[in-house]
Structures are given as structure tokens and as C-alpha cells.
Image: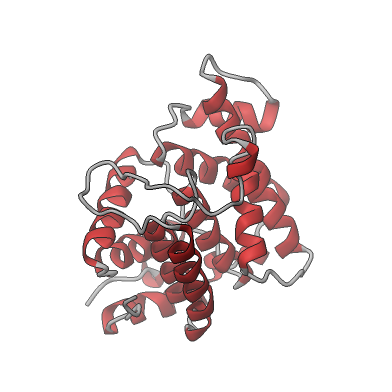
Length: 255
């Protein structure tokens, strides 16, 4: 698999993100963590085609008010929230989060609770999977999936920069499609875990157009194994959020 490579422009963005005070995950208050969870779940669910609005997602998470949606849509949001918060609690209590096979399979099982058959949750697939909007086809047999999966987890440690590591894990787990379903949700959760464990607020968006940008970027990676489009999306979403919170003289501007 190709190595993530941040060019000079990306490195400058990454440095700004890592050292910006508004990036610091540990600075978030309890109510800010709750708000983060709401928009993160909305963002991740929307990418999967979930029709819960941001307001409906907030009502479900904060007040347990269920919208007039299918059971699977409601359960998806609840699973996203429960999984996200469990990782937040680990990070906030200074527990070491090791992203190994057990952790990834546990995350997948949590995200797909009652949405997949029990035998499929946290288990490598043994059948083909088709991805909409691309001709790319992931490897078919379980042994190949397990081998590539192990290589991805080993190679994540080649990256000292947490932003590069997050991109590497996200893109390659999503491209491998190791499970029967829930692969992108798992990949985004791993991306966020890397960031939160490195004291960085994870990527999220409440803007519908960013759902399209995400999909385009990950499909481009599936087909080319070139990280550039996803790197730009990933870093620019962070820069956009930080610039909105910063004074004009503190904002990041590309040269």
C-alpha cells in the first residue's frame, strides 16, 4: 500500500492544527464534548445515508426523543454515539488506546449492534462486497483480508505525525472493507480515535456539501490509492473550524 506523504503545504497546515489551542481535545468542557458527539454522529451517519437531521440527532442523543425514522437509522445514530463516547471516556481518563485487531473488531461490533447478524459483528467477511459509484472491488477471501488488515495495523506505527497516521488508518481500512458492513463508520471512528488520543479534536462537519466531498475523496482513494484528495479534505476541514474560532491575526492562510 502507498505511504501517506504530506507535502510542504500539508505539513504547514498540520503544524498549525497540532499547535492551535482550539485543537486541544483536553480543553473541551463536558457540554462541549456532548455537542461534539452530536455533530460527529450526525456527520458520520449522514455519510452513510442516514436521514436524521442535526436537530433530530441532538434530540435523540440529548433527550432520547426518537424521530419518525426507521429503526435501523435510529439504531445507527445510537451506536455511533455509544461507541464515540466510550472512546472519549477512555481518552479523558488517560487510558492508552491501542489500535490493534481486538480494538478495531470491538469498535466494529459496537457500531453494528443489532444492525448486522451477530456472527458478522467484529468478524472478517468471507464474501465479496460491492461499493456504489466505483468499479473498485476489495479483495474477496478472508485470508487475504486478514493479511492486509494486519499489515495496515503494523504500518500505522511508521507515522509519528498523528494527522498522517489518522489519514493512513482511515483510508486503508475503508478501502479494504474488512467487514460485511460498517467499514467506513469503523474507519472514521479509528481516525477520530487517533486524533483524540493525540489531544486533537476530531474531524466533523454539519454541512451537507461536505458529505459529498468526503465521498468523492474516499472513492478517489479506492481507485488510485492516492491520498491527496482526502488529505486536502481532512486538513481543510480542521483549518476551516480553527479559523472560524480564531482572531484574524491568528488564522491560517495558505501562501
